[in-house]
Image 1 (cartoon, one colour):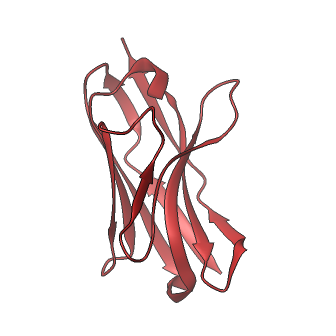
Image 2: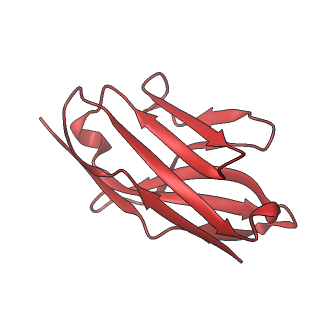
Image 3: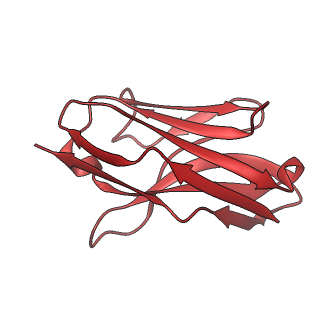
Length: 118
């Protein structure tokens, strides 16, 4: 079992920045891909960015160029640096990890709320 705990959410102004962190614990040796998802009010949960064990990254078109995902393989922490924030970035952000033993095994944090005001 893997436990994920997000932190760093809060309120930011349009054009501002926030840095989200996700600390992984438990059976961390089993983690393959890690990523960030978000769910805005009244919207479906969507992929924001993810990163493989090899460091390959993928971003949603709406955040590419503004957000940067990174992974600390020593501290077992996932980060999302969010710059040039927009009100439409307002959402609950969830940390996600899948298990190297099966892509169908998914782990989720409880989420951290990001609110961007105009």
